[in-house]
Amino acid sequence: MIPLLTADEMRAAERQAIEGWGVPSLTLQEHAALGALALLPPGEPIHVLAGPGNNGGDALALARLARLQGRTVQVWAPSIWAEWRGDAAIQARLWKGLGGEVQTAADPAELMRTWRGWVVDGLFGLGTTRPLEGTTLTWVRALNASGLPVLALDLPSGLDPNTAELSGEAVRATRTACFGALKVCHGLLPARDLCGEISVVPIPLDRAPRAAMQLLERPALPAREWNAHKGSFGHVVIRAGSLGMSGAAVLAALGALRVGAGLVTVLSEPEVRAEIAAQVPEAMVRAWQGSVPAEADVLLVGPGGISQVPDWDGPLVVDASALKEGEGRRWMDRPGTAITPHPGEFARLFRLSRPLLMDERLAQARQVAAGRPGVLLLKGAQSVIAGGAREELWINPTGHPGMATGGSGDLLAGMVAGFRAQGLPMREAVAAAAWFHGAAGDRLPGAGLLPTDLAGLLPELLRA
Image (cartoon, rainbow, N blue to C red; front, side, top):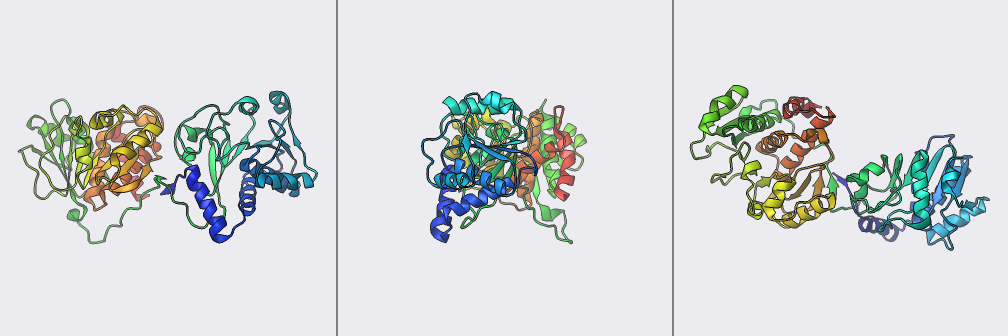
């Protein structure tokens, strides 16, 4: 997992390093500036934009280190700050001690037309919580219009580090030198798109920062024993498939099989049993008789118009038609359960307004999952995973808009069941399914992608 820190969490990590280890704050700043400078192409002129706070101090430190390396560097500011604050004041004195100047200009757009090389954005960092305005906004607009490559220090000026959303205009960076750890804005869309290529610059922190939000990495799956057999990898039972919607059962079965479930049984409505069996010969397909087989290790219910969840005490995945209005808390209170709604289903399940913005999705997911044993997979761009009696949110970074097509969720639900049948805890099974589902889509960018295309890529991804 990759932590996504809020500004307060990052400040706490820095404070622990300063107070716990005795690392001077200027040392943190020097490490940050030196790491950021290494990201700039050698030989290119550097134009540094410095703000009045710590981000400006980082920028001034970078300018000084660049000049000591013999680089061509100038420092500019939207206005000559009446007073540099904190460590920035020390960095300003050090810069001026080398004969450096802090310049400004009445027409930044005209000025930038004369520039070549890279611009370093050190205007505002962790302290940004309101939209840019006035002279600073004029400079940011000129920078974005200039077409010059930009290295942002920690985060592009104008982004709020604590949110995915854009509260106003911000610098569009070519690269971002993120200090110490990723912040929320580095990992979540749409803010992520303004950061360009992100590089984490190490600084001497006391320990790995703790975060209430984490970005999924490729999940580690258990190795298979040499003498394993199909019974070693679990039996998924899928209650799915009705007239006109047999394809959902097919895709759910494919999802479970393609992630390695040992056995898959589909319990469908009688009129579509033969149709499903013909399309997935690897699965056992039976007409629904009113009960779940005793040999089931996990039950998936809902794809293909199935709304009634049978009595079952074991691990349960609830999807699609089985996600009924107002029943969200029932499932979140049931241990060993995962629910996989898209935003519209989520709103009906919990009788909430439909979450449109990423921040709304995060807040609502945290609200409904708090302290509950059930696991929520809130689907969409950057799916959100919550619950399982754990406080942190997990965000899935894989996938793209071309995957937004009918049947994609059925395949995903089958994958969740398949991973759970193989012994992964439910929250880890949900995370693995979300990550590999999106990673398969990333192999085939663009529109026209079918869920069956994704299914065919899964074995190769699991082996990689």
